[in-house]
Image (cartoon, rainbow, N blue to C red):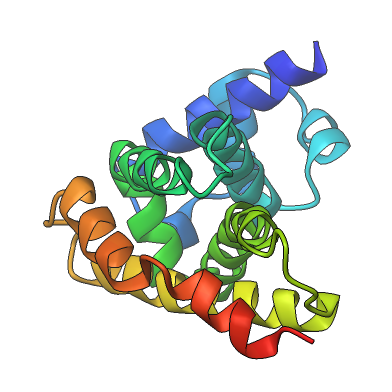
Length: 184
């Protein structure tokens, strides 16, 4: 039941975002649309932004399944961009609202979870301190997030595959090169 209730709130929010910006949607609007009490909403979420984050987490978890290796991270990133485009109203409204910082932080957390295992995989056979591997993953995650946010800012017009191809071309072999520079 809890997952169903959360999904009902998510579906309601997505529906409302087709008609008005996130900043103009209230918990009252959501609970009236779902036909439940405010307490039901607050049982699951602290506020609407927590609901937005839950939606992003659900969407990206599905998109990233089994895409955390050097051979598959690009597919995971592409799936995330496609999911973002499928939820364009939610993403653009989040970007334009007070939760833009939340969107950026969320994208970073998601991409770091994809990039760090790739860095670990590329570190095979090298002795590199954990802090340096974390820094490399952080650096590339932030760069890729910046590309993603620019894509959102410009209305998501480019095809996700095109963005992923350009990013992948730029970083191909760079993880290993960076790791070699930090190797003990």
